[in-house]
Image 1: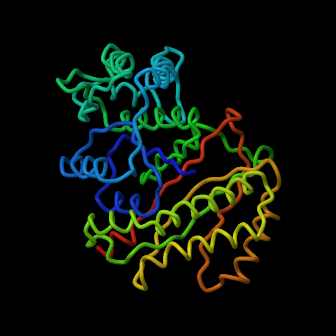
Image 2: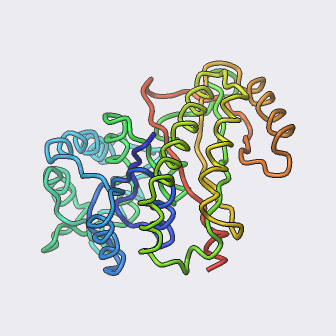
Length: 327
């Protein structure tokens, strides 16, 4: 899990999220290279020139391939038999999306997405703009989410966002809850730390830290131990030794941040065909015995889930609220 795809688009909330990415992600890609506001776009361009953080966009033929399921999805929303979709809403919402007054978000032209954008124009979901198309922002977010999802399924990259409602909709698009049968699914919060004054730290200083050989090793070690832990959790038999290895990598990386730190949350959802409760109980016991004063994992309630397809992507969302309060 060294490579993450951010969605929706490239509209990260602020500089703070990009600083988090610099310090915790090995490689990050977007479904678009244009964003607002302009200052943030310039910051991303600077990161492209001065770091190895940002990955390449898919090739046009890949985007074309990813967009075909989206065109089919939008077509189904226009069917006379359409009543409701658990992610895209009801006919009343679809009708509002087709009103030109609600086309308020610019989705720039992008090689490979021409058929999707042309379809949106022809069906009234979007209006022509000199730089691309204008469409409702909620629809743009949902389409960007689905593009990122198709890319993730093909590439194996993880998804990440700072919009928790989109993460919930993504899970909903992959699955449905059931009272008695299916996979055991549960959210897991991963509590990590960043410098308390991160908002005030200059990007140049963070770039220097990221380029430090020991720090880069630390990022990769953290992702390796977390990846192994998540893999075992999905199989239903994670071991305390894997939790210990994860904690060791977290401690080593956070030494670079000094004593004044602030905690934030990285959340993911996990599913296993086996009973999850015994495994979680063992891990919680181990955590209580070894890290009672500084627990980093929190397991949420287990729900039974049916998945629409066997192949699923690993997706995360961030909560940086405590850091924003410090800023």
